[in-house]
Length: 388
Ligand SMILES: [Zn+2]
Image 1: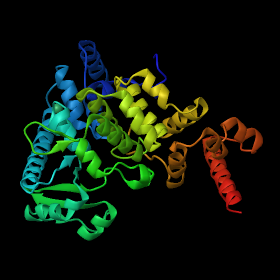
Image 2: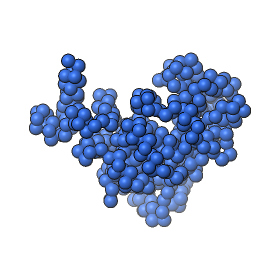
Image 3: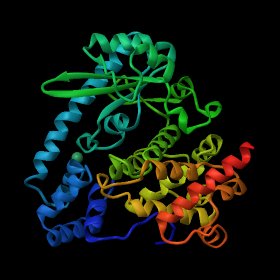
Image 4: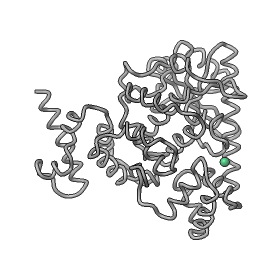
């Protein structure tokens, strides 16, 4: 390993999983997949795919290595039908919007499935995330209503079009052929909680830079915007919370599916003040899938070594694998996200002294749990002190 990309302990199962799902595989990878599948057995491999919510993706990787049959073929076929239907809906929504002069950008998996990844069946998604200009939000609401979509109330999102217009987006759902298709209509690309509002790129700006996709009126973000978008999305899920593991494929696929101007990425990331968060978003797929992210990019974004080591250790303790196993508690998730915030090192060190210093100077002993408590107390101390 030449870079210090993120890794966890490799097991035969994890190796099989990562090789089977990554965007590009060599002949050598296929041979390794066949060997590992033989060693683990078909049932264990299937359980592994289920545990990582990656059934059709593992199926596709194994099929390229010559392993087919149940349950793989059925999984891939079911996903092909579902994602195919979602792509038809995307095309229809975008066409109806285009007729009204409204540009629609498919974010994240919508664009990855429609244009960036060669197999749409391998891009499972819960909903379609669509970005439109704020000024067109109400007309888009009418377009979706006319297609039979209804506003989903009671969820995390705004309760209707007026609230959505105020807050950033509204969720819609359509039931057809026994399936539910969900749309997340947004006029803000990234949840504002994540970014300093004054630096958040406006939807108009992002849409202005977006590109057409072949065969559809829907558009895709410009490559740099798209990469930053999916990177912030994995960060928002703390790199491990459901759907967890498979989220790291977004960066792998965007990097393989587009030509990335890495200097442009660094410029945007620094301007948004999200260097550390994006560092982890890139470092994890580099470590898991060998995604071609240049060393100089990781080096530029990497936080100070002690802080990087702490974040790596922290993330390993919850693991980016097995998304349905317990991850962060609410409190440690908050701390983890605090630790991702870009701030001058001096500020950061005030909140998170190195573990050795916590043990020596602040009398914290014991394992990770007490260290976390120590950090919590430390933050409370600092905040109180600053308030007085
Ligand atoms: Zn596939």
